[in-house]
Image 1 (spheres, rainbow, N blue to C red):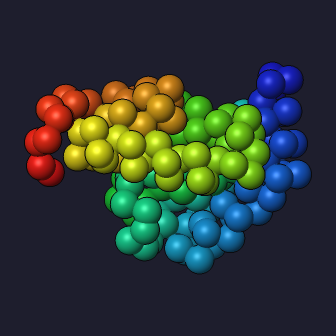
Image 2 (image 1 turned 60 degrees about the vertical axis):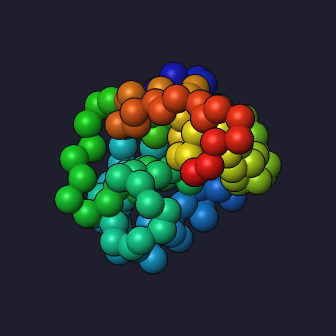
Amino acid sequence: MRAAHRVRQLVNAVNLATLLGLALAKAQHGRLERGPDGLVVARDARGRFPVAAAYTVGNVVVVREGVQLTDDLLAHEAAHATQWACCVVLFLPLYAGAMAWSWVRTGDHWSRNVFEQRAGLALGGYVENPTRRRGQAG
């Protein structure tokens, strides 16, 4: 494992994000397994929130039931694990703000969300929508 991945793993453990991710994965009955680069993958998770094929909290990638974890999706989610480490405890409010901004600008939570853009929209299975014109209703 590269040094950068070890640092990410350590920071996400110390900031308790990985512990939160493990708790959410277990609450959604995810099957835990070791993933690459210090990640933990929770497969076949059940639940309705958040609405996504997969999501990441700390170093834990939670994959919904029936979703195939491709290399592209894993790369997208790994980028989110790094974002968690870089933002430490501010990740959730910053991500929520980025989601809100994207919703106002495009009507979806990803197209203008800087976290999703930097993780690679296409890798995460997202299609980028155009920006709304001023005064255009959703």
